[in-house]
Length: 117
Image (cartoon, rainbow, N blue to C red; front, side, top):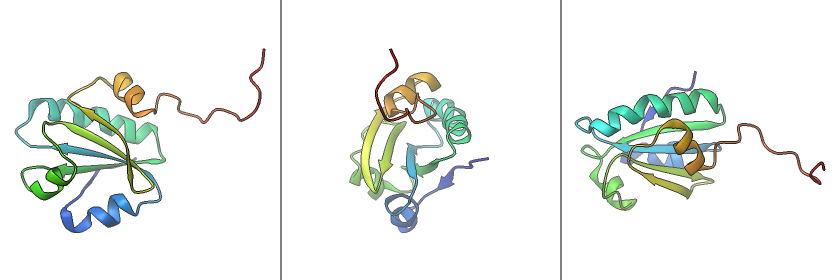
């Protein structure tokens, strides 16, 4: 089971930027209804994609991180690969739409080589 890790300014570099995994960061607030709807969707994605880490940043507790990544609305989901922002999604999306937006809808990597006819 892939449990989301709560990340602070102090742990962001270690947990996200230096991670050897792809990290999906959920910028949220406890009072945000759409954020509460998105939490179980991200939990499912984390469980189904074992190579993906889910991290959560409470924007009320970590305003400097929210500002650093230009979070203007929540929920704001940012995918990091190799310490760099790869994708961003603003607002609630159902699981399939979120996976598509983040490029996760193909659960297994495609084989390399010519396509069969």
